[in-house]
Length: 305
Length: 305
Image 1 (spheres, rainbow over the protein chains, first blue to last red):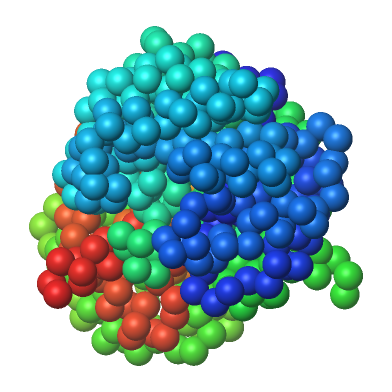
Image 2 (image 1 turned 180 degrees about the vertical axis):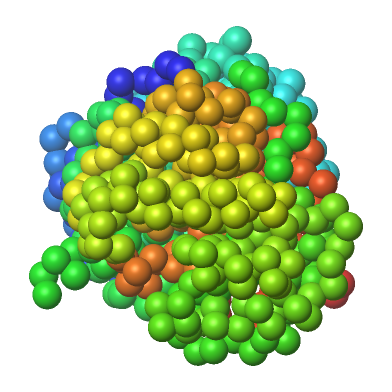
């Protein structure tokens, strides 16, 4: 079985992880979180979101976060930008990479942003042009790539179609996102292989949620078709608006434990991430959802006795 | 990628799952648990343990449980038997299958049962002979097949050596058990492939714990080398004495969700198992550790509103 030698991890905890937290997380906590994650060795830290604070109040301070963090050489600080207003704020804040997002499900696109998939992507064209002109990396996320809370199944061709549009817009990376965590390994392999027919596989990222506990199995399946970029969230920060009380993004510690155990390099210090996971969970009063994080912390505690 | 069409699941919740519970679970709850699991379609339900009640007080009522359950046609009711005394009690109780257990780690064998691996397996010889004479299925479990809390790494050859001894004793199934949940997919595939060189692959079972969240990824890796029997525990019942507070056996619901999503038959009714998981977790006051179980229950609850 062939696996990549190196996997690039995008740590999405500060954005996708925190954005659904009900109580406002203090700006200084977000700043410390981003700084500690960058120091742990992530190639890319998703640091915030320049959406309307009416939609996502938790991310209202993203400019302040970006302004206060220490910029670490070699780390890409990425942010979400839905439109030109968000893009301009992101540039102002010094983002290295901006993330645009559409869905592979027409039903989701209509319900979520009240327009078709094609329209939603056309709306990103000015952002894409501006990013190109400003020399800022553009990344495109495809929501509901493995299933939709409204329409159920999503055809791989629908995912491929969005991926092709993203390439045309100049995206350097295309994120195949299982927004609601419903996918299983065979389907994951099939969708990744389909996308790899239009996007060079080294530019495809897998974004999995552990709603049904399937993420690591899906990452294995994705790696077997050549995908070598994955998103993860420290302590499994995040949730699922479509399954109350369910777990969120796959926990970074679980991914790191698996990859390092498989001899795959990431450049990330697992022990440091375990410490960050314990700290942020305690700091925001949330259960640490990382199984590897909890087990390694317990082992550490036992060794100290 | 090739996967089996059918996977046989051994539901170990009533034994491996419950055995570490601190408060005594009432006999009638265990009986209901076994009955409901059998009705959900499991080919094999591990129903109890005939070890000394001094070692495992939670299992002291296994004879009473076996005596009170409804026997479902087609279900194998298996129990753990460390010695002839346990075996005789198991026969008396009407067990269909007895389980013997040794370790692949010398350090674990010495610390746990105060003898070498070879000695521990010799001690099972009378049980094996008696099982053969009585026409009772014999199953052998290899603890610490992917790592040991005392010695750390375990060589695949050590696992193969125990597997070979089990075959010689007449075991119809050999369980490759990651007792402390430390294994990752590449290692799992390597160990399973090594064991498959001496044991026909259709007689190898994978027994994974979710201590580090690796179970489903390991099941995928094991299936890719042909393994098609797996152990799982409803609601993820169980724990890890070597990592306090860590999760236990892989949750049956998560395994079922994955297998059915991959188009692999199990004969088990996932919805029924989700219901059993909710019931037993609530009944014994324990968090339901199945991610698929919790998500499916949340989806169900939302649909009912």
